[in-house]
Structure formats: structure tokens, C-alpha cells
Length: 383
Image (tube, rainbow, N blue to C red; front, top):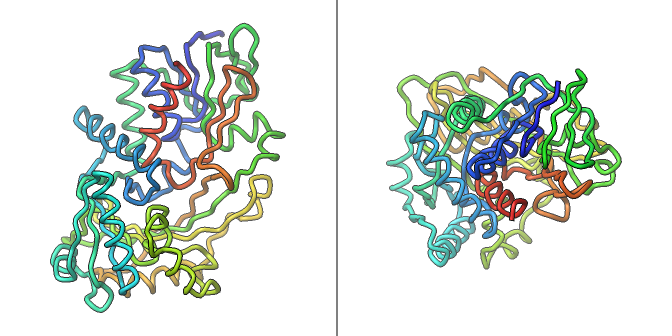
């Protein structure tokens, strides 16, 4: 069996899917090849927060483009997109200083944000503790999605409306370029195309192990929890807190950031495991809480293991209770996610040959930045 396409995208997560989407919009015949029955990696193991506000200026612009794309697609079918905004809750004067500075930066960048008083925050977010909150910075345009459901619905939409051809449970084991590109699967099926884009750490590792092992990719393991449904309780939008303010890239562009960071104790439990506390309510009324960050080089990624560190979970729950009084903190689900990022660059790009493109290592920017970045990258590849 031989199939012929203009572009083959290997890896059906959010980064690969948006590359396929923007190629389809150019009128190209595209195949998306996914090794599992549906995406199983970082795309479905995250918060589903689309927060350009947390990115540096370059990626904020990609994220703002992504917001527009998500909203356009949501108008065609329900992708679980909710435009309830994002808020950063400051817990002390230092964090208030940072959100004031970020507010001004966003004014200068013409990206809408609104300063909220302590009383504004407490009125807007039910259960927010007055002994934690000093004030907040709200981004009304930002969205949340239920990631696992969203990516499946997006695949279906692209298949029905733009004739994307999707091949699930299909593992590519070899790619060659010689008068065109050929992808060979584990079942001996060949897919031919003019170009191939590989979006996925596992595919990259299998196909180009030497390049993978010599790359500057770092693998990150994150732990998250999900409460039982909260009944009639409602927590709108993406809730990001003081530790997030002290971590996210956008705040590193604030004038006071370095001074504030230099005064922190770098040996605390939250610093050791890269913990910051986020909340997002899912469609069933449950609340997702997290997350943590543990790191290993790409070639030593197995060192991170498959176990959940219960000390991390307990710490996150205890910290979350200091921030929001939820009706219940009874946990129904715990899991970890894995994503890759680069030590020295903001994304990994490599061409084993002229028309084969490896694009991975987008880090924690995938849900937010993939839509806009993929548009830029497809334009560049097909310029």
C-alpha cells in the first residue's frame, strides 16, 4: 500500500495537529500519523490553560494568535473552549509589585489586562481566602479547554471540514528522503509526501536516536491532581497564584523580578520540585490542582520514573487549601505529565534532510503557543 500526500505530520498532539491545520488551510493534502488510538502525551496531561499572559513577548504574540484560532474553531464546533479569562493572585507586596509592572508591560504591548483589588478578587472567585489574597491581575481574553476532549474533537473537525486524513495506531519506524519523502510504518506501509514534519519527542527518539541523545532537550515531569466534582460551586477561568508570579517567563521581564528573586530561599520544598499552585475547574465541576517540575536530560528521561511522589501531592494540597476554600479537597484522580524543552532555545528545530523537519521541545508552551507558532512555521516552510 502506498499513499501520496503534500505533507505528513508525525505526532497527533497539539503541536502536530496545528501544523496539519495550517497546512490544510493552504490547500495542501495532509496526513496526520498518530502511534496511539488517540494522543496520550503532554497534550492530554496538562491543565488546558491557554495563557499568553505567562509568556515572554515572542511567545505571547504566538499565544495571542492561538487565542484567535481557538475561538474561530470553537465557532464551528464545541471544542470545550471557555473564555473566562486568567487571573494571577498576589499574596504579598512583592507579588503585587510584579503584577503592577506586568500590567504596565501589557498596556505597552496592547494586551488587555485589568488590575483587581483584594475585594474585587474575593467577590469574583468564590472561596478565595482573604488572608492569602492581596490583589490580582486579570486577563479577560484568555481561555481554558478540557485538553483530552478538545484534541479528539479538533481531529474530527479537521477531518470533516478540511479533509485531514488521520491514521491512528500507526507507528512510523523509518523516514527517508530521495526524490520525495517516504515514511515506513511498523506494518510495512509506506506513506509518500513532499515534506514531513515530526512533532513528538517519542517519535523523534525512535527515528533519530543519535540526534535525540546529542540534543539539548530536557524532559520535565509534572504532577497534577483532580478533586471530586464540587457540586454547585463555580470557579471561573484559570487561577494562577503567587508562586506562579515568581516563576512564569512574563514576570521575568518585570523591572523588580531579579531583585525579588535574589531574596528568595532557593532550598525550600517548592523550589526543589518546581511547584507552583494553579486551579482550573473542569466541565464536570471538579477542580484540577498542580503542578510540580522535575527534570532530566533527554537521554536519561527514564530516571524520572513512573511513580507519583506523594510528598509533592500532599504539599500541593496543603498549599492550595491556604489559597481557596473549596467545598471538597477529596481527590478522585492523580497523574503525571511529561514534556520536553530545550536548555538553550525556546523550541527544538532540526532538519535531518531538506524536507524533513523535526519540531519538538516546546515545553510548557504547547497549549498556548502551538496554534500561533505552527502558523508562522508552516508559512516559513512553504515560503
